[in-house]
Structure formats: C-alpha cells, structure tokens
Amino acid sequence: MSATDRPDESARFWDDHYRRHTPPIDLRVNTRLAEITANLTPGEALDLGCGAGGDALWLARRGWRVTAVDVSAVAIARLAERAHALALDEHITAERHDLARSFPAGRFDLVSAHYLHTSFDLPREHVLRAAAHALSPGGRLLVVDHGSVAPWSWNQDPDARFPSPTEIAAGLDLDPGRWSVERTDAPRRMATGPDGRTAEVVDHVLLIRRTG
Image 1 (cartoon, rainbow, N blue to C red):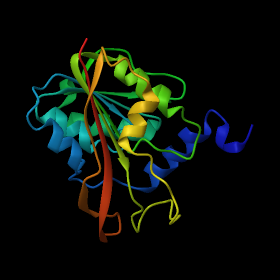
Image 2 (image 1 turned 90 degrees about the horizontal axis):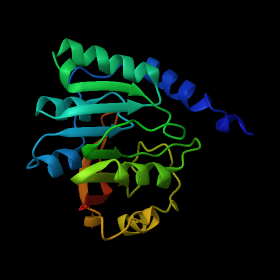
Image 3 (image 1 turned 90 degrees about the vertical axis):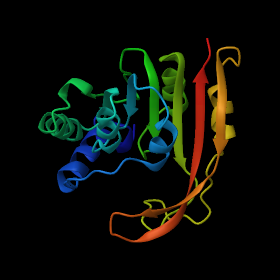
C-alpha cells in the first residue's frame, strides 16, 4: 500500500491545506451552482467536498437546508463556526466524511459535486452513483468538473484529458427509467485564481434529475 493510499493520508493532506490557507471573509459561490439553482425551490441539499464552504453558505442564505461534507476536519470545523457567526446554524449541518469509505445519510433535492477530484484514492463513480441514489424524486445531481488546465491548476500537464460530461454520465450506468440527463455541456467562463490571475477556463457540466 502506497503512502497516498493510507486511509488517513488524504485527511492529513487536506487538514494541512486548510490550516495553511485562511479562507476570505467573502467566500464565493461556484458559478455553475448559482446559475443552475437560481430558479429551483429550496429544499434539502448535499454539498460533496464542501471545502471552505462558499457554496453551502450561499445555498443556506437562500433557504436551502444544507448537509456539507468534507474529508478535512479543519474545513468542517471552520464552516460550522462561520455558519454560527452568520446565524445559519439551522440551515447547515457540517459533517466529516471520507467519501471513499462513508456517505452521508438522507434524501436530497440537490446534490452538488464541484471539482470532486483528488490525487488520493477515491472511487468517484461509486460516490456519484451513491449521490444519484440519494436524490428524492425530482431531485437533481449537479456534477461540475474541470474541462481545461488553468494557470493555477495543480496539474499542468498540457496533454491532460478531461472526460466529457456524456462520458461521466455513461460511467454512472443509471437506469434511464429512473434518472434523466438534463444537461451535458462545456461552457467557458473567466475565472480568477488564488493569486489573482484571470484566465478563461472550461467547465464540464452534468445535470441529472431523478424521475422515479
């Protein structure tokens, strides 16, 4: 078993990351989440890999009840503190999960998986399939992946290949009688990196709705 495969290695890595990086006061919501949920009726939401919590806080402010999960206990503790400071305690439940080993309980009207990539062992298809099965009837699974290499990306391989949303959907092997694919596209947008640089990036967007 390699070092990156040890059960606690991922948690240690991300705990160290969040200890070193204090999140800004004004956390930003991911563009595609704001775009796709703008006209949805608030309900129960699950934020997979919530990180600093920008998406969870944005949803909570709009009336969603959010279960926000991350492998980092540091990130989860900070999000819980931020939610309390903003009087959003009743709208956000922050839970630590290593998604390679556990998945949050419940039924959700929205599951958001933004940039759920890691260099550590993660059965992504299994996690996303579990997310689809956790949807309530009519609920939506939003998967947003990187579709290009940004100047600040960890992976600077110019030959990196990014699976299309259609490929991701096919890999989930969901029953078309119970789930329908509502969107698969690769929109471009201007993004700002952690060092303030801007660049055009591509998002791979997959939106699946549970129909039965």
